Image (tube, rainbow, N blue to C red; front, side, top):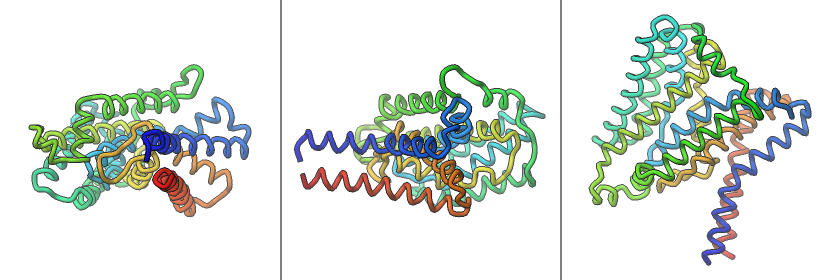
Length: 314
């Protein structure tokens, strides 16, 4: 395979998430022309904001060859903390959120220290987050702090808030993962951990920081979700685990080798959110929407595999 063909294959793969997003926008605007406005786009992408941050959290974990099955319940727990403790006891609420992030970092240390499979550990952790959320808020309720609701209702100029947030999140994630020394270490730990260790870097420290960052993005996801919904629920983000994994893969990541794409992951999160809106416009039952989202993911992955196959045989 020549270098030119290889670069063309990479470029086509990198463009797939953007093409899928544009295609969905076109289909929605064709189905509902009135959605083609500042207000309409804001409504379509509002719920993408918390999913974007949950997806970035998942992407960091996947970058070190792990998988996080607890991000959904963790986001729900953060929303419950925000709906109960933050309005009445802000200091206690902030301390609880900090403790949750520290818990994430400790789990990263445990996984590396004992060489445990992340899938098993985070699956067990998901029940712990869910149990804490139910203890804190047994029934849906509570209230979001006023400043949080106001922050999610800001109307910036030119384009709606979700697009500004998506651009900023993609830029921060790109600089962190693709342009920083720590980003090189993260991807190196996912691609060839032994080489990183031989170079003198501590895999334990890398994993602890990665999991702490994932917890931090999970906190931002939970608070932004609370700001949008204005109340908490122990199951409010139960779907985020699978959606975040699908968004990361849709964005061009691989489960092995430390290969991730921050910009693609953000586009993937927006695409899956728009897919739900499009299916709603088509009056498809929510029970079928998860399956339809899965079909979109399979279609994009099939196109990616086709591009790779053509590049190999050309």
